[in-house]
Image (cartoon, rainbow, N blue to C red; front, side):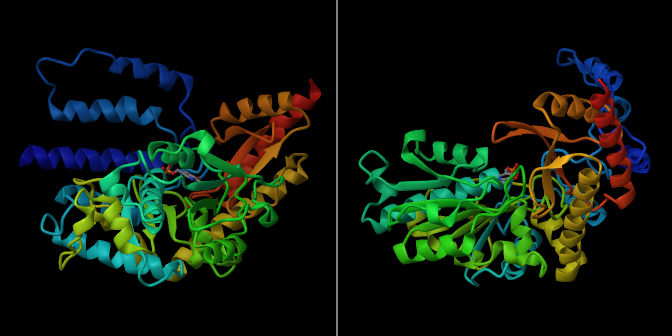
Length: 454
Ligand SMILES: *Cc1c(COP(=O)(O)O)cnc(C)c1O
């Protein structure tokens, strides 16, 4: 017990030290910190080390090779920040080491998951009967939702996939945005849809499906659209596509990993107009909501179809009196994700969620405006919390990106957009202030000046 306490105290102290210096920390680890990672290289020790020195090894070497994800100037990918309440609740849940698979394994997790379902459904304005599962992330959320879609569409066509398998299944039609996220393609592939089975719907310069370009759908069609393109943050015309799909009896899935949160803001709700008409949705709490990692959310309005697609005994679903979280996922044993998620929602409230979303978006808007004023080409309107910028030539963009990534001050990732090199900026942490953005803009500005002088 004494050692347990010492270990936890050490973990707490080293964490507090980390938090207090993350503002001065390099946004991406320095070359020196990275090289010390080699000190981890060894064979599995025969005799173990004492736990204290193991933690110490993490603190002295590992912490320095982290990205400053919880700081205010990390703009890479769409990696969310971490709200203190999420962090602290996570610690408590870790202490309890609850298994979220079954209610009988963790009554508190079952209770909080039930509440999270109700709250999330209300927050996004989805149909009341919508079921929620807590999964690792949007990739898994999409997989779960599309499994339900596939089985359900086949069922409607008179084919029972669960007993017959896929071999003699009628052909389904899969429509997907040309700018769909890689995880959507991966989910389709796992579910037995090859590249040649998928029809891609063309998109405009910002990556949005043009409503007129959506092919005629029917009751064997699965249509996957997105709320928030991973590069520029643009939204497909959800309302129109959902109406077309409803008329045709097609299934619409919305990948809204970070962008679905627009639905919870009065100011940005218009971007997701009509989302409640879709059949399933995927979204992450570890992105825009700033809950800790490993907190994906899958939502599906057809509860039975959803649960039956994910369970081995799917045809005989028996709901217990309490909620068994595993029924809504591909997993059994799992983290009690509902605990930190509930804590975040409870502490923010609907107003706090809205404020968080609006602030991220306003910061992104400000960032883009300042970059535009400083000679950068901001490629898209700032729809939500992220945008793309570029210089005159691909070569210059590449050099500027490298300079930013090596600046220690801030970090952005790069990508290709319609054949052009771009720098992606994602404002996804509650910790990002205007000063953080000003400091980062200086880095961009100096990098551009340097490259112009050459
Ligand atoms: C991040 C992201 C995903 C994948 O989500 P994970 O949580 O990383 O599994 C899918 N779609 C979009 C648009 C994303 O931004």
